[in-house]
Length: 212
Image (cartoon, rainbow, N blue to C red; front, top):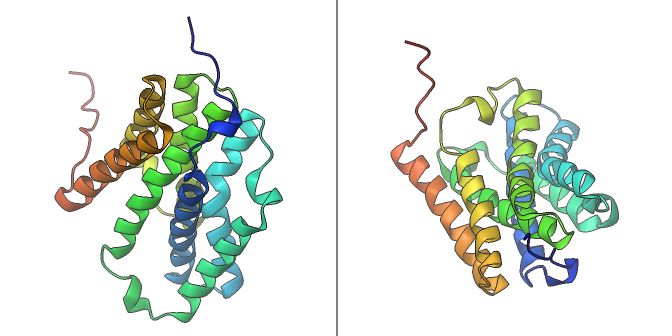
């Protein structure tokens, strides 16, 4: 028998902070994608917004929730603030792997938040975990398509896998009765650790070898 759907009121207390952390990092990555191509400030804001809210928008539409950034001015404000930060700071600040590490934090946080929100709206466990993955990854997919880069879905690196680990771990821990705060921290840590290992050691999934 399937477990009773979780009411929306029992989202983790820290859930809004997970949401804002993921939003800020993804907005920064979107604004950077535009900045590296010498675009205008308006384009930076657009890239930051679409990257930051893209996954959450798809999630909310699918689970029947009010689209979060339409009803909460903080979301658009964070995206605008990150775009402004990218615009006024030297490019050298954003070179190397620094953004990749921040992105790893955002990926894990957003995956956990997306899964938690889906459970809160009565979505069954497996689809709820998938909602976490979509929350964490769809914005980046949109960013890559608009920037003309290979989508994260088409790269062998452990990116979507890390989001899946975070989201699935959270759902599993909640079903096992682990307190929500601990479940969120453990799951986000697991997703971040896998993504960090992929960045540090260039871990990737094996590619399809074709029929032999």
